[in-house]
Image (cartoon, rainbow, N blue to C red; front, side, top):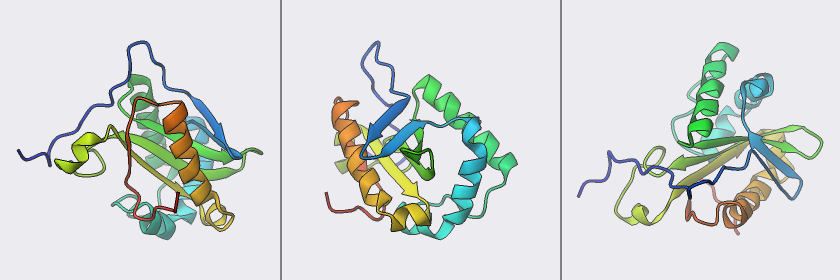
Length: 167
């Protein structure tokens, strides 16, 4: 069977509400909203090369504008509410912007194959250059592993970033 055009839905237990706030090792992840617009635009535009190097993929292909990113953030809000995908803004424990992380259905970001069918969620993230220098890229990887185990124990996560820190 050719799985390349398929996308697995995020399967959550009945009555489960995805957390809107997660905390680990000084990283606070909150469901992204349009209220994060200004910090997100600055963070993305400062991180274009680093995002491509560490996360991979085709986004972002160029700097984003507030108008463009506003639509993207509203889309992420809708997806979170509908439980289609979960996007979180990452901040340090003082509120400083670090980047974003994503819990996507398998097949949406990474082309689905027979080998990838065993995974339930495609996990990716990026951080700004200053956050990367301060070690938050690896800390975020650890935080995501912890959150999947503690807050989403029903999912087997596939970490799709191009650069994966040692566990």
